[in-house]
Amino acid sequence: MSNWALTSIIIPTYNGLELLSNCVKSIREHTHTDTPYEIIVVDNGSNDGTKEYCRRERLILISLPENRGFPIACNKGLAVAAGEQLLLLNNDCRVAPHWLSQLLTALHSGEEIGAVGPVTNYASGEQQIEACLSGYDEWLDFACTFNATDVSKWIEVKRLIGFCLLFKRSLYERIGPLDETFSPGHYEDDDYCYRAVREGFRLLICKDTFIYHEGSASFRETEPQEWELLIENNRKRFMDKWGVDPRQFIQKEESP
Image (cartoon, rainbow, N blue to C red):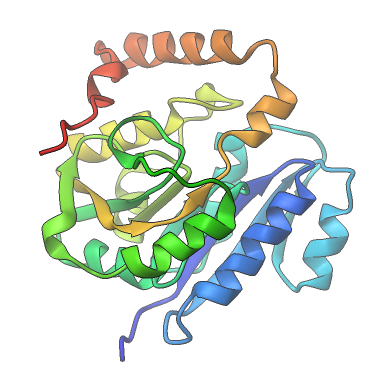
């Protein structure tokens, strides 16, 4: 049996009660009993019953008066998190068996490992896997066989996506919170990973661990016509800050 320290799972949300409830349900169903965690929901001013749901389910709730975006919400959650491991999770994700214990195994496989992330059905770059499947139920069946710890499937990268980003408290204490100038979102995770690597931390994609991702549902709801402009503006913001194009880190590895 593993003896993991507490993991704080931080879920920002905005008028996504059904997504959030499915996410929380999956965490409770598919997280080992010997893997302690807390769930912190940061609500960006929802008016769909999210606050009442969180209280009813006895989740830790941070309630913001308005939608302040992903980076700010994550930082509010990180500020109150009690865990030795910190996990940012999109509300449109649903996890699968063995997900957290496997990610923790990778995270603690070396002192220099600062952050890890799983593979999924919807992402950019190397964290997306292809399969002729649709919907959570089909992917869950897939994950039940797929999710088995295999060190040979861990790969070191320079970038992890924030849909499910697990990192050590020591990394957070070294580099601080997310950069809120990327609000309401996009490239704040690239920025965080870039800062981590600059400080000597290593990043791993755990290609032995799958979770389901609906895919940017919150942004599609709130920014339907400004989606591409938002992405491009934040890419330029990253370039102005660091002098490099973050797209160079999104290259997808060729399949062998």
